[in-house]
Image 1 (cartoon, chains in turn yellow, orange):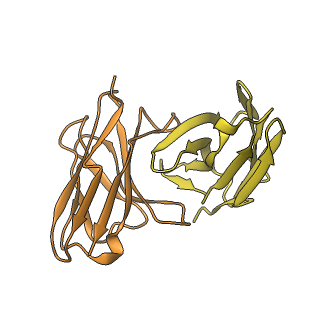
Image 2 (cartoon, one colour):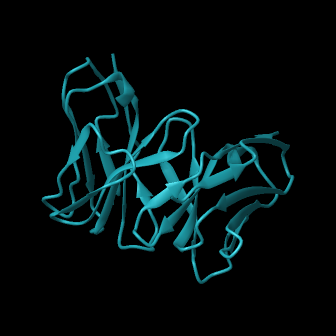
Length: 111
Length: 112
């Protein structure tokens, strides 16, 4: 069974700092990996989708990498802003079309 | 374009009552999913569907039922509600396997 782990569980940084969130998974037989953002009391919003054949994806200040062989992904956020404060979750889609989620990293960006 | 719409947003049930959580999407997505999210835990898959007339169990299907009679709708039925079903429920959809997953805003359910 696929297990997805996110470290750290919580992170607090001053505004303007660059930061990295980590995601690891146990089974490398995946279709893709997605990073989501969740604001309190809200649903999940997709940030980046990396197909299993890709190494990275970029959107604005966000860059996600994927190393399928080692079961790792990172989400890099450049020049963090208070509006980036949220919980970030990663999820892997296995070859059976099921998604497995990590428990998330709660990010606080201090003005 | 509304995306994925869930109703209701909040609900309180008594033990033993039944209810249906509604989910509809207007993106012509083939795949639809129901998840529950408990505090400190990741999302757990309850049921999913890869097309109208096709449903399959996820990790935690006990106490729930689903149907998929149309592409747009994927209701989740709770029979004989129990306190263990207190959770936030999310519906999600994607066009096909390997594509981006879109979520509804969730239903917060309390069973007392």
